Amino acid sequence: MPPVAAATYKAIGFIYAVVVIILLAYLWHSGKWRQKAGWILLILSTALGFLIFSPVAPYQFQQLVLKDTVGLGAPLLVGATGLAIVFLLALLFGRFFCGYLCPVGTAQELMYHVPVPKIRPLYKHAFEVIRGIVFILFLVLAFAFSVSLLALFGIKDFFSLVLSAGAVVFIVLLLVGMTFYRPFCRLFCPYGVLLSLGAWKSLIRLRRTDTCIKCKKCEHACPVDEAKEGDEKAECYLCGRCTDTCPVKGALSYRR
Image (cartoon, rainbow, N blue to C red; front, top):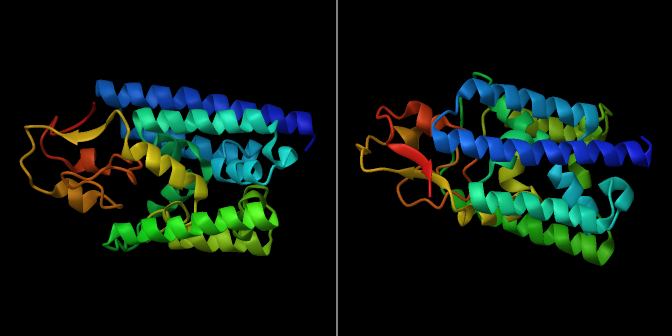
């Protein structure tokens, strides 16, 4: 793909992401969000991964760390600015980007809807520790040896429909993702580490109101164990399973 075309596609993906994040925040906050719109976004974002390979933030973050402007599709300052803006949006509104816009995440979300038995491991902090270790290893390999850890997962090959060892690894993760929610996002994604830190302190998030009857249906529905009272929502992908299962209207509210 010519560099100019690649840069144009990256710009389209970035603009799409920013506009949709703001739109999602408005819809959730105003109570106008509907899950049908979520399905449309999941399919559209996944399709964009195959069509223009954007907005694939994990790959772009990898190329930024490696200082690969060709793979990044933009000058380093532009790429860093774009990823910083997405982080700031997570700090304001939560992880809408991971939930509905990153093709790596949306492909896994779609796979999780396959009707097979689900595994929901407890001890969510163990997954955060594993991803933290992977993040450190990612940085060490990149800065000290100019080696990309994410290359092992074949993200670009998968969305380019190139059958490689890495693409097979990602396909296996997608298959695992039918029963275990978002394995790549929760265990390996380096950019997800940063967005989880943003979501941890997000200004607007899902909160329980005084009308909550403590039935715990939301807790049973949440695939990442972030629906308990007092949870920080760092791993909340705003999938909407908790609000869909809540029997009391307004008991869960997306607000400050």
